[in-house]
Length: 262
Image (tube, rainbow, N blue to C red; front, side):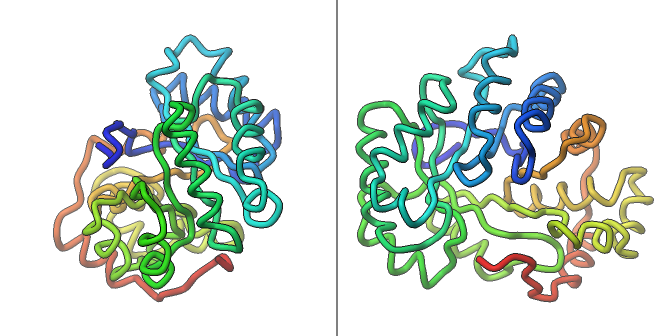
């Protein structure tokens, strides 16, 4: 349950780096396997594919939760146009949640414009991506609607052990992108000895352990995939639970090792 009064699924699909066709097929696979949360962005260039897959599915629109983002630069400078462009490209009636992709010039202006679309019912909830403690302390006093979500890079090697509870204590949900470490780091993370020991004990995969670890920290997960089998596997994380000692072992893997620049 978000502070905006809307419910959001705790497990979904990130569409970063998926081409138009890949994105359409991945969203279709997610919906067919019971997933209902989709994360896209202007910068991913696949909002139209997300919308098309949703319109072509037989899943009722109100069951699906779509997150998209507007980007610093031109979009923050002309936010009303950027927001309308997202609505037009998705073409699904309304946007469940819109985020600022990361801090930048005119970010407050852009957020205040998104607030107007919330008043009109075109966007249901607002959020931020790549905002940490200092950025939030500066940003939050300047806006009217408290963000419902902050989406940051979170994985076993970059756990944000202080940031996650800070955000959650503000009544804001935390969502993690790059749960498997991101491009170029996935094989190392999924090969991690500790994670595989825990996975073997539960007869699951290392990927499922990482997703389950996030959920038990109260972190919503949006792993990216273009593989229907992986999408199905990623949704299957509710049949086991990590013990306190297993959670502690994963906590010990933290290296504060960030894999992307924001």
